[in-house]
Amino acid sequence: MIEPNNWGRWGPDDERGTLNLLTPEVVLAATRSVRQGRVVSLALPIRGSTSSPARLGVPHLPGRPLPQHFMSVDGGDYAAGTRPIGPGLCVCDDALVVSPHGTTTHLDALCHMWTGDQLYNGHAASRVRSYGATRCGIDKAGGIVTRGVFLDVAARLGVPHLDGGFRIGADHLEACGAQLRPGDAVVIRTGWPLVHESDPSSYAHPQPGLSYEAGLWLAERDVALVAMDNAAIAALDDHGRCTEPLEEDLHLLFLWRHGIHLLEMLWLEELHALAATDFLFTLAPLTIEGGTASPVNPLAVL
Image 1 (cartoon, rainbow, N blue to C red):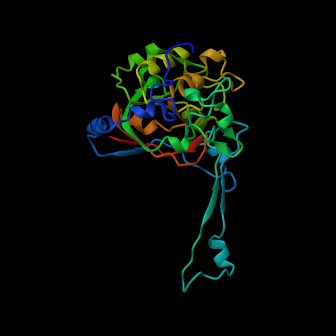
Image 2 (image 1 turned 135 degrees about the vertical axis):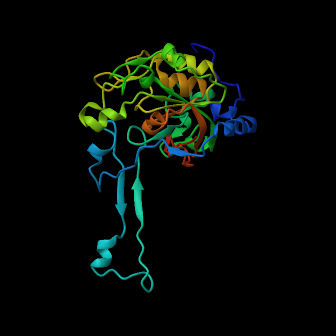
């Protein structure tokens, strides 16, 4: 390991990482951040590619399978003569297939990335099987309630969005002025989804993101979760890749070494418009057994 890490900190069987910091005391303290009672969603819409122009309508990375949304029966079927299920009673139901990484607002599980033959906390990488990860899957995360801290880096630098490839330094995070506490969910705005609204072809790469030094700065402050509105937390180059060497890869720094979950592809423009600072942060990932991620709808309660 390159720097102090959280392996063994919560015992040899731990699969939740810094979410262990969310004690009842931390959760209760977080409720004091509610001042207005206003609820703001931080999620992008899940828009099925089979029923809408999702390729242009929602930010996503190329090469990733877009959400597939199907209806088993719809209004047209009833108009064509499908029998109601009861006297005058009609119903529709749907099927949704989602591959969260790179296509939706999602929470990465601790099993999502590793190096060598061990997952976070020394769990054997062989426990990641064809049917899912039997260690460190997203089902181990549970409900997340804590204080959210908004670091609006783009606004601090006086720009609508950071430039593609821009690397946020620890100095940029410090300049936002927030006092971080152990267990905080840190929400960082680059403004990059605005690029998709104006020019979808320019969204995928390059993208702005955190530098390795900024990642270390956050890990040293014992944050529970790092959330951003870009697609990969780190910056992406012209080919959609992270160029940092393996020992400075941010997914390995956060997920693998420190057990810090990552929340990607947020929509933060409403928080930006409200000039939010801190708030009650809530998140309920789906209990997908062995999942590497879950699509989510994080909420900020101001």
